[in-house]
Length: 211
View 1: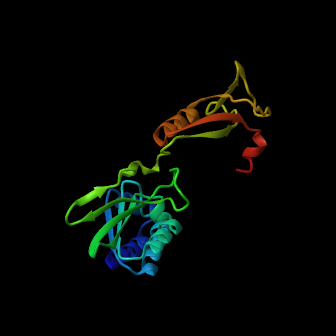
View 2: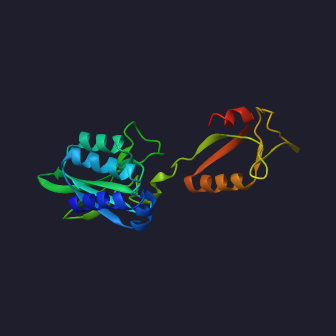
């Protein structure tokens, strides 16, 4: 793993963060350490350097207490919002087992939002839990939610219609509007992928100046 860190430092001196991402896409980064300071530094270094993209995977193998595992995954964006899994060695009836933890950001879970997605023991191999599957679909809203979207009439990118009349920038409507245009199409695709619905409210153009 030290070699990986060294490569990051060297590449950082030569290439931009974007180039590093292009050249390191679709890779699996495996880290084995029980040093919490090192793991925290790795997480922050990966985030600040934009080194991980979704096709990349990070696997952290460690041997820590469960509270420390939960804290690491909650505190560090790299372990909670990227395609990462933490494998923790734990005791299981006097035998060792490996538990796979993942952070589920959009699920209706208790406060921690960290789940034991799977475990491995020699007698059974890899076993996924019944409620959560160890895959990339964890970023979806499991139960589906309804969100409010504020938009400004901005042709040709955004068209807002109230009943059959076009809604201008200066108007602010309390009722739901018909949201059309290229940006509406993109938002619809995102909603389908992440499993949420939305309704649109008109926003005064002045609000957009502060975004």
